Length: 251
Image (cartoon, rainbow, N blue to C red; front, side, top):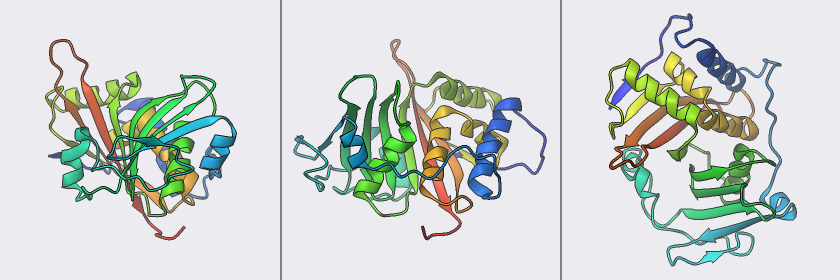
C-alpha cells in the first residue's frame, strides 16, 4: 500500500482545488474561524419521515422493514467492494450492520442507500435534487441506530465526475497504474488529501463531521482510494474510505 504523507511546504501544488480543501480542513480544526458555513445538525430520522421520506432496513433474511418500527435487523458483514479494506481496518465481520434504503416519496431522484454499523457508514448510492444534503441524511440515520464514535466513512462506486477526475489525475501524477485495485493512502494535511477534500464525496464527509462534532475536535486523518479494473467497456469502480480522527473523544 502506497502512502502520500504531508509536506511542510505551504505553497499550493494543486491550485484552487487544494486551496478549497484547506478551507474545509481549517473549518474542522479551527473553531475560531468565523468563515465556516456548516452548522451542527439537529435533523432526525423522525423529522425526515414527517417530511415525507420513506425508509427501509434489510436484514440477512432479505426482508425490508420500516426503520421506525424495527431497529435491530443486522446483515452479514460489509459490502464485498470494501471487504479487504474492512479486514485491514479490523472491522467486525459479524451481523452488526444494516442495509438502509431511504428516499423521498414525492420523487425518485432523492434516493440513498447505506450500510451502517458501529463506527462505520458505507454510502452505496446517493442521488439528490433538493432537500437535505447527503451529509445530513447520513448523519440522521447513523445517530438513530448508533451512539459510537464514527471512525470510517466509505463511498463506494463513486460516479461524481469531479471526484473521479481528481483521483485519476493523482494516480497519473505519481505514475500509478489506473485503474488498479492497489490501495493508495493520501495522508491528512498533504496537498493530495486537501485536493481530495475539495471533491464532493470527501467534502460531504467533512460536512457530516461539522454537523456532528464541535469544531476543533475532529479531522480527516487519511483518505484511502482503490478501484476495480474495468472490463469489456464496464466503467471503473472507484471506492474511497475517509478516516475520521478525534482530538477530543467526548461530544
